[in-house]
Length: 327
Ligand code: ES4
Ligand code: ZN
Image (cartoon, rainbow, N blue to C red; front, side):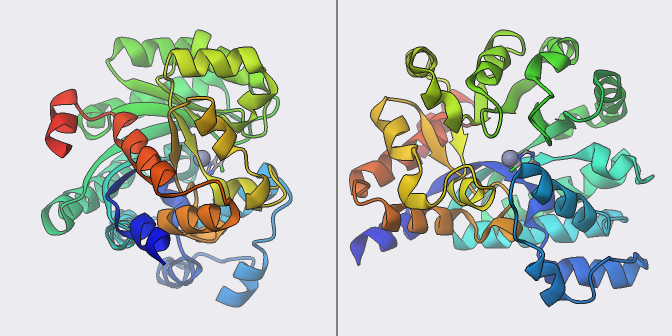
């Protein structure tokens, strides 16, 4: 079996990973006990049994409940360090990691504990695992733009610890343009900008993410194929899509991996990448995404594997000089 070995061992970048989505049930229960947080689930098994999602919102409800056990800086550190060890096992050499500060600050956790916990894990991963990484602060789109501005304000003392901002949480009814002003401010500050769009939302949300937010990448974006003119634009402008195959199946965006449109996106000449999104909830880390997708799609082979890995580096926010050194 040469193809699985190639998928496992090829160096790759991961560009769409919510760190709170890497919290495994065992760690959730350990932190709940340590912090005295009550969980609405009796056991690890009962929690795992609840991971049967019907759409994005049914997942988010459980994801925010899981994140409620994170209180101290060391909790954020332990979660992030556990992710980096998994990433190293998957030959991830570079990771751009989303975090959702509002999920924590709303519970009274100081911004400093969130960001420094993540940052110290990233430093250790660089030293001990040789993984480079960057942090991307996500605004929760079901909250207001004013709350996003307040979150940005609270994070600016730690500006040097994150390279960009993103937009996540409930997509339908919360179009990108709701955040036009705060994204304009972020761009002025020199932050990279990305947004989830076209996961559950319509292709129109991908357009407004590009036009109104001026994003550099689209997270998910799989519904672009409903609008051929938009697909042409994404190809022409080489806007990367950070696609998450197992996530899309778990959230019922596609019925199974054999029906996933990633091959069509590649054929259309898009800069598609493969990522894990919320690996503790969706059935596996990045290599599992590659392995299951390639197993389900006979048209995907070594050529496409190399293309996807190359795309992951092309789409990353590291400087071009670093990209040249990777080659
Ligand atoms: C997310 Cl899969 C997904 N979509 C939107 N927001 C999210 N936050 C964490 N996972
Ligand atoms: Zn996501």
